[in-house]
Amino acid sequence: MTHDIGGADVTDTYGAIGVSEGAAVPEGLPEALRRDAATLAERARALGADRVARLPAAGVIVDERVRLKCLVPRCSSYGKNLMCPPAVPAPAEMRVALARYRVALVVQQPIPADATAADEAFAGRTYAEARAAEGGRAEVDGVKRSQLDFAALMTELERAAFGLGYRFAAAFAGGECVLCDECVGQGSGAPCKHPFEARPSAEALGVDLVATAQAAGLDVTFPAGDDARWTGLLLID
Image 1 (cartoon, rainbow, N blue to C red):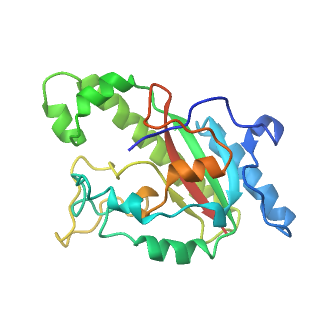
Image 2 (image 1 turned 180 degrees about the vertical axis):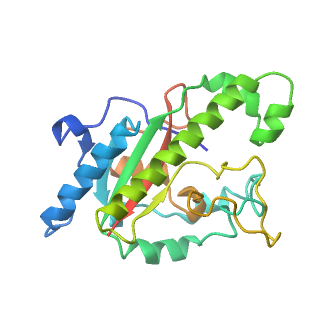
């Protein structure tokens, strides 16, 4: 669910907006695209992100083992949440789509929670299950609020990219979709209650966010500690 990007803040290549150039950007990238990527990074920070790094979309790492971890051990949302496997594109499909994009922004926002307390509160359970258990409700609610905030940030960032003319802009937040207390569920035949806000996580599509963050020039500590952050991805063409 979380990825801890520890260490120093990213290099402030663009000055006040705090963008790391990360991996080498392809030669011949239009100046307008470079400028728009910087504008979107600035927008992400204005919305609450504390670290943003840019890299070529080709540098986003897709690994079938990430999708495997949805099953081993089996995530409680697998086959249930509309934004989770197997109802979302497979890693092979993600690779094909990535080939049509040119730039990716890795976006991060801190999770305001004590790692030990949060681990004890969740103990591998869903939000609803953890809230129903004895103790830890404050930690559970705090993590969920921060996840909802980050999901809103990424949705707004996609909207901003669309407004700049990137009609295929796609944003992916961290963790499974938690917009509803209980998803209508795969196989129910019921439509999503939040079709314009709901997003699969990048991990659900097979994206290795730890390796991708490293490729973008961000330091990574795994497993997550008290410096845990939500990590999302914005793709623009």
